[in-house]
Length: 85
Length: 543
Image (cartoon, rainbow over all chains, first blue to last red):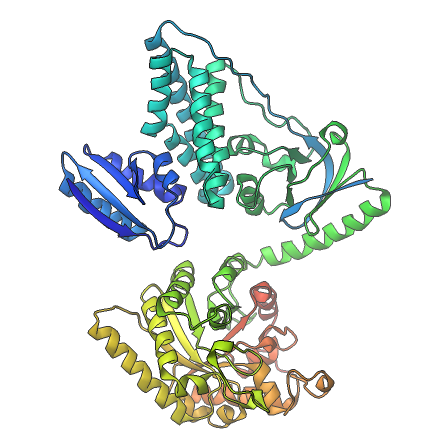
């Protein structure tokens, strides 16, 4: 399993649109991907789950990737977060 | 005549017939099903059709109202791909043997409740979206078609609340105004109203049984709906509406146009802001950049010195939202009429002539450096300029530049990246006017602060109401000071702008253009009026 943390810098936090983009990025990988914030963990391949975390600017999320192509997926998702959120 | 008070979601006046929109509320019954696989397939088919419809609505909204509004339908489609949502429906069908309609309704309600309980206005407003998507699937399962707006003439549309899928189906040319009983400033209808630029109200508790089909007026300035107005009221609002329309048409036609004179001379018209919250109106009014970002709000709204990170976030937000357009940040201008307790400044006999602005910064370099570091870090994200207020001498500018170099060296040694930052000064003291040629050689630009320049040139306290007749900013002395600053600025290699109130005075626009001003920075709501004035000037004509 690969795991990394990221602190959101976008002033609007993870609202519907970036959540949707993140889900799309996750959906292209066969591995299992989870996002956690403050102990609550959700499936990163679902937009409602990500929205339910209510992640705001300055808050830290943990992304956990396990399974096929996990290294590749973790690297791409981290780059996505840095570029968009 | 009856009046209903609500909250305005968008200002303006609408006059027309009232149309009460009611959704065909469907009753969803829970039934037992025998063939679970067939029921799952029924749900899958309905879900796929709903996704197809949402793609169609996305395309329609893209064309009509643009990408920002259309994006909601893409999110809606993704709700129907959410593994949590799908699992919930599938497992209710498989484990409890209930019908697809009921499983979808229950799942939609659960997610809506979860979002409604969040401590975030934006997410709370999304609860209606989840219900909307679920209702779409249910309508398909039940074979009911969604209803649209049935009217030949444009109407004031009243509804409890409107879902995106409902509003997108309306013929926009038939809608004069939205009035909803529920909803918030973040709800889809409010956003759509702002996008369409039509007057709209929320939280209006109208009586649906009596108002349908009646004549109505929406006053988006006061937030009221008037039902069956009398003739005088109609005439009054008709006049107001005509005036609004004319103004709007004139100014709208200027958006996207250049600030160019009839003979082809172009200048920049920028906006003055007091914080990130003003950016919306800067963009709405099509300003070419920010000519004066007053940084005082960070200090005045705080109980203690704002940290480097707090300042950095605020500057960065503005710089990013301006997307590469110039953002000129003025450093701390505390003192005189703007006081902060935690600065512990002595009480002064003559605060306007006192320890203020750059004078504080040079005597307390630690405060100054914190701000400069924050601005330089934010400069990485766009095009940033810094200007220093209350300059009276070349020596002050050299001291400032030394501190700036120290800050840059610190950032370099920490490996923090920053952009190419232009440095300028406010010209607002007679001393700076007299020294303008020498000062111009030290900096990239000047910005003339006409309010203080008038006060100091005419020796008239800005705060003293008895001096109104003496403190005339159109005084030849003030105009000569401005002219001298522009000429010397250009000779010394600096561009020259005006960011004081005088910059927005369209009686003087031609005068400033003839003096050779390069930029006028005005409040966002004045940008288009100044553009209009610039476009009427012909510099090739001499009077």
